[in-house]
Image (cartoon, rainbow, N blue to C red):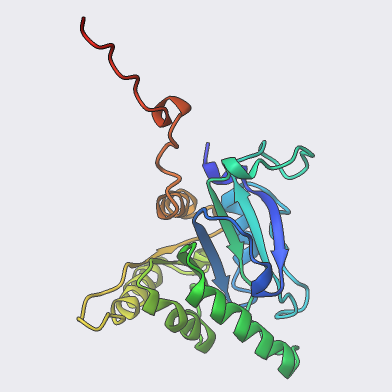
Length: 239
């Protein structure tokens, strides 16, 4: 069973000062409104109502955090989350759709998202959700360029891949990877950016995305047991 299935709501924040005071790694999910971000999160976590999509694109201005570990699976369970046992946090970032949003709300979004992806030490990686038919909108590029200087991994999930034929799928993968490869550090070394196809409808790419996300936050490594943490007993002195 995927460890992502353990996901449950942890907290929501609207200001950086309210970010969780945890030290576990975080992985953020970002994407333009209507790219299928909420659907992808729900499919990967095997829960229908974990992530909610706003009916009005761009209206949701909060970061929603979901915990992995520290509680029984399923959101409806009432048991408290044991924060000491949380393995990582998933951060669902606001979808960036500006059509129906005021200027003040746009500025708030830019500050919240920009500061979070650029300054959050616990943020281990970014999952960028893009419509496979329309990747790299201006706002996708802005998100990439906010996060790229960190040198941390970005995994691009191209949703709605069922809308593409075989040749289109091959071409969009090649073009997207080429775009990602164009980002290099000051020494000309490429960043750890990867891409895959995904379809919630046809259930394409779920296992690939799950394995990548678990690897990026260390869920592919079993946590140490209490026995591992206890120092070995010193041998008795020889008489």
